[in-house]
Image 1 (cartoon, rainbow, N blue to C red):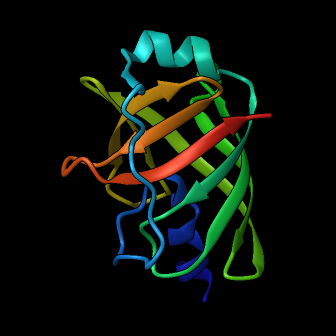
Image 2 (cartoon, helix red, strand yellow):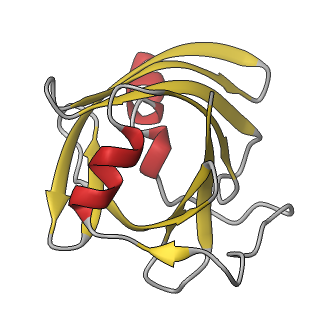
Image 3 (cartoon, one colour):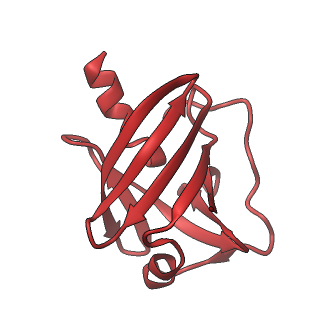
Length: 131
């Protein structure tokens, strides 16, 4: 069970299964550079909803470039867990990974006060809202 929860610590970027509810990338969303993303998200509290996991997941997370982490709390199918993942970048993608895990990377699009984590197949993995 501990290993399972450890794996979920990288929940902001996991690619598991397909969930029945999904969201489309808005037409006006702009793909951003990692510098633009840092300016937008660094140190701010984000309300996160993840769409491509096999369970409902929502979270309150903070992205910190100074610490190189994404931290906070997540509600995974009704169970609260602590989140602390390593934050890195790979080209024009933001990546996170839990201890001993392979990085999960996504393109970042911004629309208003939201950012969208987008998989290589252009499906939305997660939506984060400032605040």
